[in-house]
Length: 82
Image 1 (cartoon, helix red, strand yellow):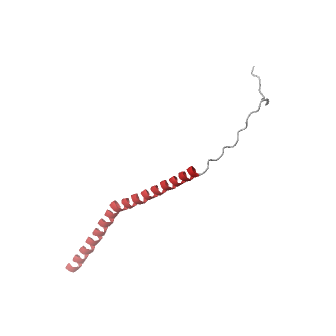
Image 2 (cartoon, rainbow, N blue to C red):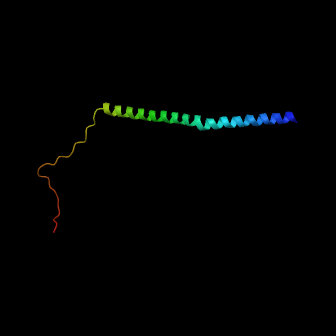
């Protein structure tokens, strides 16, 4: 009977130790891993934006469409306001 109680006590202590370790991992290590991955994602997005900006700066400027120039003598229709 004493041997059974001793063994049950050891198993109980083992499960409590595992629960404490898992709680510490969940509380301290997981947030650090999440922060690391979030930071790397943010840096990757910033690098992509910088590459896009560099491509736009190096590309030749696009010509704007020619605007229609008003010639002398064009007829402008208007209504008279009374």
